[in-house]
Image 1 (cartoon, helix red, strand yellow):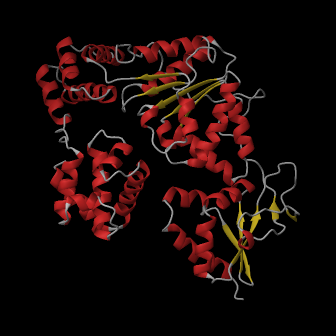
Image 2 (image 1 turned 60 degrees about the vertical axis):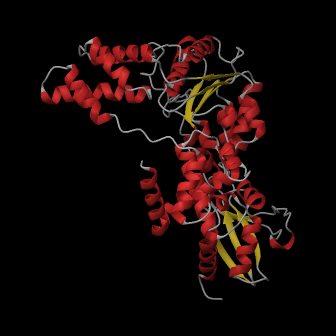
Image 3 (image 1 turned 90 degrees about the horizontal axis):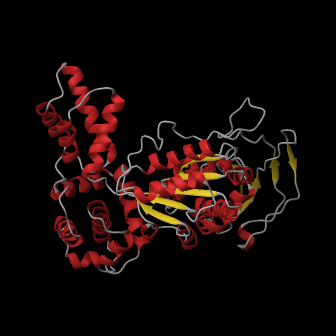
Length: 475
């Protein structure tokens, strides 16, 4: 057998696997695998942990079997070597009698595995150099209750948050789930709750983390075989704030570990605070058991601020900037920008910047000029039927074919694009969109969106379809 054959075989396997899984899954679960040997039609792969092996066996064993048979032949077999973590042992390689049970017969051999020792990575949330373990809460000290403008749009969430800060884990608001569109103050309010909790309860351990950051660190823990350390760390938190939980959508392994942590903390009377861009009823791609727990406490919507609240936000921002701005100017901005607090504050800062550059007074005329450049033409409103009609006309197929069960390539292509634009240009949930496309479920729509995103990055012809349809939709 030629030297390096195992590497070439595994490289060929990866090319096939890459076409059959989404990029995130490929990066998380296949890139860390190393081919270490090939003999007598047996490919030996090294994986980072037993958990890693179990996840592959549960989710990808059929894909691995088909791929190996395609590359090696029907006689192909697979063995694993597992790297395990042990900080008390020296860095060397020894033989272990650990056997991995397989639910798939001879495709995975129950052989002794090689076990490699490695140091546990330092926890990124621990502040080094301090004898007493101190958690870096990751809270922004500028996002306080004092500079959070209360209005009818956020009163419920704000008042519940203050009650939580006074008595974390002991109110009926556990978990507290704050939801609303981007830029309405969810992140600001969650930081405010965390900061006030630390102020009133100095002994409490508070941690803010985005859902994306949580997932990234969990993936790192899997690769480094430190999942138990990862779980134990989060079990030590008294107030756990997770921002943008919609990013867990479709991430089954992350949801499982988060479910474990959520259950433990809740049972121990610890406080959980979650934010999302939609209510639990519209969170697609989540385990039902997790969605049920999200509803255990209080779900509070943060709405787009009304006119009076927008004016008050601008007054607060102008005061913080130290520049005097007339009420008329602030009222014009508040009237013109209705979408989000982030865009509202951005508009004021733009007016202040223009004034500083031109060394001119902040007048209504200047403000109108700036706003004209900021306010873009709104996207037109479309129904799903209209979108299907436009996409069907573009591909010269009947609209009813897009809703039918046919698997013809050109029809599937049109259906995926129509679903993509339906999600982009309407407020419909994934389930609602699926229903409009011949009674399909949310997972079909989710798959269509992923397919469009992937092809737009890799297929020039497909990307031209997207651009043409965007022009037809005039946005």
